[in-house]
Length: 182
Image (spheres, helix red, strand yellow):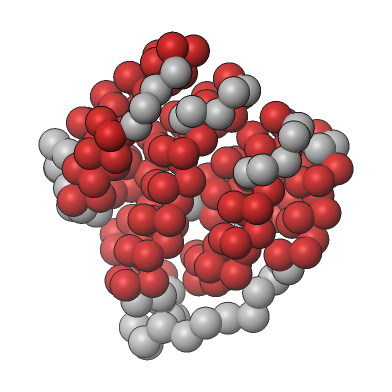
């Protein structure tokens, strides 16, 4: 296995921003299909390149657009990518280094946690699903620290009443992630 390199970004931040701003279901779903079809190193490089754009798009007025942000974070799945690389390293010519995965996972977790207090329930539901996937990837790769940090961040949230159920579900997901093992 060769050391990591950063591939070209197959999906430019501007394109992601344009798709999210339209709020069009078909355009968002097509983009998600494209992102999910990328190799692990391309997904990670794309996530790194579009993080600022995704954070900006969380300020869009349209709830579906904000839900799209969360779905894009999930499609680029740094937690799942790390798990795949760790469980089948011989499948890859090159793999991203652990620090890049760690940074991306921390960023994805922060986006999910923040989205749990969104006014739109669709955004909160997507964030719970994203945290579930992230924590599962962490658990399967033996990372208990990330779910512990997520749990701590969730405990520190000021939670409006309409968000309480989603936050409680996310806390249970994070607790499961701290258990480790398969």
